[in-house]
Length: 159
Ligand SMILES: Nc1ccn([C@@H]2O[C@H](COP(=O)(O)O)[C@@H](O)[C@H]2O)c(=O)n1
Ligand SMILES: C[C@@]1(CO)OP(=O)(O)OP(=O)(O)OC[C@H]1O
Image (cartoon, rainbow, N blue to C red; front, side, top):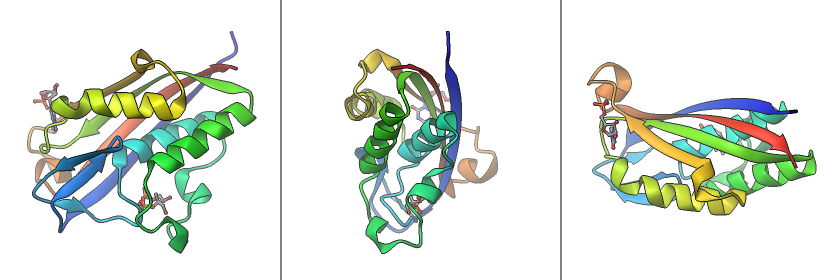
């Protein structure tokens, strides 16, 4: 069977604020993130995985951080754009698996909501989308609470 695989990774620094956007879900937190858009590392990593599977570059190529149109943008729009590109090139998402890397906020209580939004934006069943999390045992920049990271892998199948 013809298939394509993709992977993505994204990091944003914590900064002033009282919430973070992760997987399209607004999560109350004692920090915000520094970003041009809404800084949703889950959706940015997912977009890079989808674009990588298509060999169509990365999110910054499609939505340059220098472009004022994307200031404060809802990253779900980036995901829907990538999904349109999948269809345009004759591919559909088989499944995606995403890992959020941070000490806090806790992701478990929000993972179901993230999966639902991502599945809706990609037009797939919820069981095609996995969202999970790990700490780095207080090691490194995520361990020190300086920022948050996410990685994603996806498998594409012919449409
Ligand atoms: N931000 C996070 C980090 C972790 N979790 C959940 O806790 C489990 C244990 O994490 P370790 O890093 O100690 O292995 C992990 O498997 C997640 O279920 C979380 O919800 N949010
Ligand atoms: C999402 C975009 C949009 O301009 O900007 P940021 O929110 O800063 O996010 P990042 O992952 O650093 O870069 C990708 C950009 O495309």
